[in-house]
Amino acid sequence: MPAYNSIFNADSSLPTSQLIGNFPLLPLRTRVRGPAYTLPLDSSLPAHLSPEPDSESYDALDEVLSLFRANTFFRNFEIQGPADRLLIYGILWVSECLGKIRPSMSGREAQKEVQNIALDNNFAIPGDPGFPLNQMFNPPASRQEAETLRSYLSQVRQELASRLLARIYEDGSDKPSKWWLSFAKRKFMGKSL
Image (tube, rainbow, N blue to C red):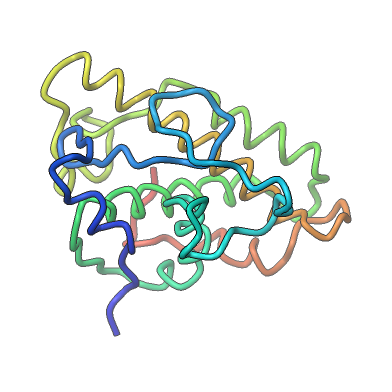
């Protein structure tokens, strides 16, 4: 059985979509500042839920969170389009965030820990020697593209971290969901960021 691929591959393959290297800059439903086009926010939707996939507010980060648990079990992943690269990066980022959350952490402690790593701008991007997936990602063509990609990935990291925390602590208790934390030790494709 193959891993689940992104439904945004058709959108990210169009000539009008923006690619840096072969990494897509897809629109996001976010309040975090960055280069991504902002999708409309649905204020009636609770923070721990995603809109339906056919909704205009559904974005690639909703897809990362919904496919994370299923795709984590796969050691191989066939890339079928540019949006799959964002899916891979998002799954690896969620794994890193889950690794920082301990079962005894309160919501506030987890938020502090995860937001600290999300706000850190000293992370490797495609083309950097420390980036673990350089064989699958093309490097940016220029310094300006590299800065745009770093800014976009920072926006993705911050938004994914806040959505993940909303799901882990969704029931209102101060204990993290065991269901999410059970995936903390699994490595998607045997890699980590």
